[in-house]
Image (tube, rainbow, N blue to C red; front, side):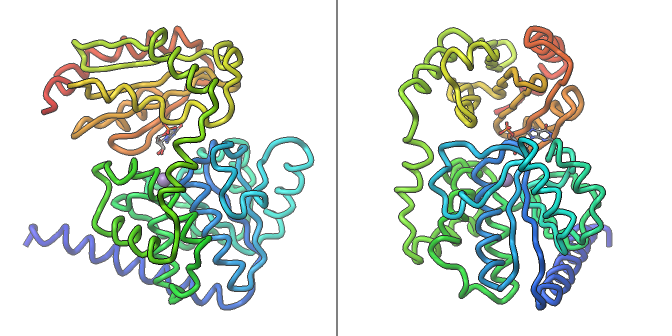
Amino acid sequence: MLRYLPIFVRFLFFINRMSSIQALQSFLQTPQKIVVTSHYNPDADALGSALAWGLYLRKKGHEVHIAMPSESPHFLSWMPGIETVMAYEGPANRQQIGQWMAEATLICCLDFSGLGRVNDMENLLRQSQAPKLMVDHHLQPEDFATFVVHDTKAAATCELIYDLIEQLGDKNLIDHDIALCIYAGLMTDTGSFRHPTTTPRSHQIAAEIIDLGVNTNRVHRLIFDTSSYERLQFLGYILTEKTRYLPEYRTVYMTISEAEQRRFHSQTGDTEGIVNYGLQIKDVVMAVLIIERRDGVKLSFRSVEEFAVNTIAKEHFGGGGHKNAAGGKIEKATLVQTEQQLLAILPQYKTQLLAVE
Ligand code: 5GP
Ligand code: MN
């Protein structure tokens, strides 16, 4: 009997999801005032899902505002509708976003499911009485939303948005621009369709997006081949001067200070993806980037196969994430202290690190 339990649990999840979608569908029958938001330091999945969902909702006749906890990276400045996105920075923007939130009849939280991921906007969300929609694929969601579309097996929130629009019966409304935004998130969150999270569904959606006329080669170039010369030099500097390889732990880590970011005129988003270079070394299981930010030290973890970095992020660095891509933050620590902390915990993971095939 027990062996049917997982199937039964999945069935319950399925029923729950369908009822959430039906409830959302009837809620969206009347025009709403909607705020769409996503996590701090929005990436292509965060922005792609927010923009695609916003474009769709506007087509349905709703009033939509998109508010992000922080600025968008410049390599995503080409995304359709990005000029309408407001960052929760500076008094004027903060006031405007506060007003949108106060007047909202629906707040959509995309690509995050822990309210801590919106930094300074957390209280606005907690205090708001408006119903919330959560669309996300991260582990351990917080219980704050009225409508929940949550699936940790989805490769990207953009994938969930595509499916959601289809389930709402509006697949015909997915136009070139919506598809373009969805593709950006799907491509980046799957690491260009190579991460183990990539499913047949991810490829099916990509195929349908190509059918809609999206130039996927151009999207790839816009995201990955628009570095400045200085960023490339910064990368070279990090790889030669700031990267430590610890073969005894099959680990690579990098440290970047604020001064170094200033020296290379590093922009928001410039350090995105750098951590992945660590995994290019043969037999490396974990790569870590430790970077100094205005509000503390941020860590990015990447791993391969069964080695779970979200556990490390959660237990030692107040963060979380996915099995193979996670992050954390220490507010009151220096770069060197954080590096020491990482080195101190490595021995307890040595057996697991060495066991990976
Ligand atoms: P990145 O290294 O690209 O900043 O983050 C990788 C993944 O780790 C994100 O998609 C997110 O799931 C997770 N993550 C990053 N930072 C944090 C954090 O501070 N807290 C939590 N819970 N997850 C994080
Ligand atoms: Mn995502």
